[in-house]
Amino acid sequence: MTDSALQKHVDVALVLLAANFLLLFALALEFVPGAALGVAVLAGLVGYGVLRSD
Image (cartoon, rainbow, N blue to C red):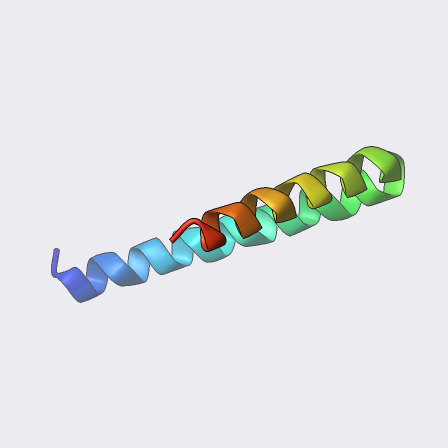
């Protein structure tokens, strides 16, 4: 498998993973909004820390 084909497969997998996360997050917002917002804030803080650590 060439590098470009492998990159295409990885990109497809990441898109499917992101779609799955958004679907689960939308369901969480409907049924347990407080916990969903808490998880979103925590994920944002961790992401911010990872980006700022470089």
